[in-house]
Amino acid sequence: MNELAVTSKFQKLLKKKNKESSQRYVINKISTAIESLRNSENPESLGEKKKGKLRECYAYELTKSSRLLYQVERREEKIRIVLLRVCSHKQTYDID
Figure 1 (cartoon, rainbow, N blue to C red):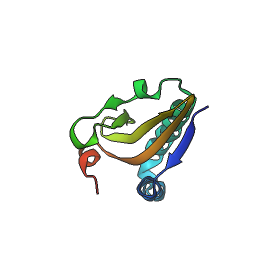
Figure 2: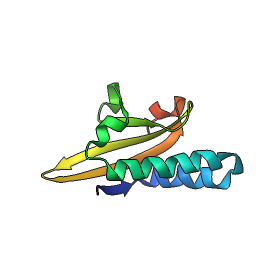
Figure 3: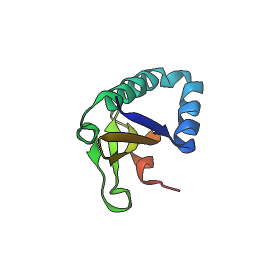
């Protein structure tokens, strides 16, 4: 099982989605995605490798318009997945 780390930005965006009743479907997709990443031997294969300033990141497609942006850190035999943000496809590149 892989180690998970969560950024404050991810927590803030997830909390916002939890408050919106219309986002329940996406919340379920997020939970499924996190479990898949946690249990995968190759979490990089579950997302699309990004380019440019996000070249160290992967985007896991939740819905047609929602993404879970994450990084994979490998050290020796351990895999650490850093959950960066959950956002729309367009917001993926809005890094601050």
